[in-house]
Length: 491
Length: 49
Image (tube, rainbow over all chains, first blue to last red; front, side):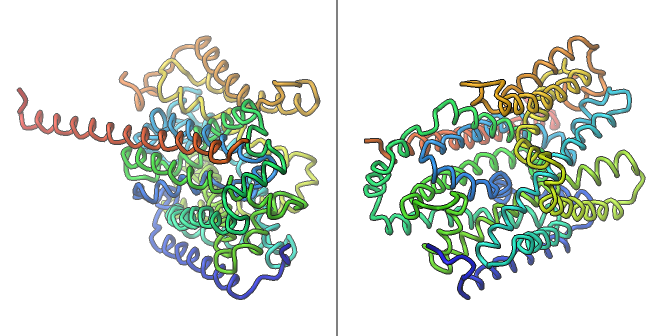
């Protein structure tokens, strides 16, 4: 077993080098950023390769390298099929959402909501504020979970306390996101996704050579528990989680902002196609690594430790540091994207559009930087003292993907393609989607919903209710105004 | 006996099909746009049949 907290100099130097590269990218981003549009969407200069990398790196968080790997450790291969749901979400986005959002060409998702659903009696301001608030709450709280994960990793590797580990992580990420903005975030994503892919792939032959090859792996897993090589999780369980991820991805504001930052619609299409290549490699790699670790270390106290122990104990100092770098990269790339979206919701949508539309470009740029610091530090305290708020923090962390999926995916999809959908209907739909996620979650927890239904992720009923609310509410109210339809339809 | 390769192969094949479909769609839309652009250039020159 790994002696946690005692890593060698080779390991440390590799990790420090990695962070120096990330800081250099942050500095480059800072020097190139001159205004708010530059800060939030990199002046729309991102090409297909960096675009694909940034979509992939943003999607794959520490959850992939710690959580998903741990699920494979516990349940075997079947969980790999959740990726199919994500890919379906991407394909729907490729055809129906992403290029259209890029063509629309604004800066944030609330920008779209405010223009398409502008007949709210306040020129879209109410819908903008409502959607911005949803994003800020769901995402800012979610960051706290990523900090907690980072704290554990730092604690495991360096033997420092959890709080110190988190503080290091917070300092690093705020420094390069607040100054570098989207350009630094996208370029560091490019480096990070390469490290993640190489880390996931290169670990496999090393682990397999420790086990004795693929045949030996299959034989040993089969003798340990045959279900590890079959459907240990039922297709329904895997399918519903896959759907949840797919809907979550379709409407995810942190991915849409990446889409806004690309050069044109064609770049968006190629980036989405290419992102799937990274995901096949990492998805299959993480599955094999998780199962291999089950054989090499069958008695881990928590499966979430599998990736850290593999890095310290199996891979050697350089590769081990690289894989730890990959895990931290996954965390950093997701958090920096979420920070930019949350900061944009505060600085661009609430401050720049609602409170002080006359603010200068420089003032808006600094409003974004200060907002990044704000949305970066609040989750640190939530991670430390979140328990004082009861189960609220844990609850939002658990359900943020479902909340965002159930409230944003249908307004984006239908808003772009159905001219009968109006503002009251969309507002009702978003509220119903949000409420359904909460009710479903508590009903399953409280034993009101049981059996097969209890296996269904809250996002599925959430999306269905959002759809019903949008269609019902739209037909019970007058048609949308020509002004709100003009940017999207021939009217 | 269940096989790891047997479980992973459909996953990888599905992924490759999705990637191919996505890139073909991207190319198709790209060609569509360039044909429209050529068409509009013809119109600007007063060309066409």
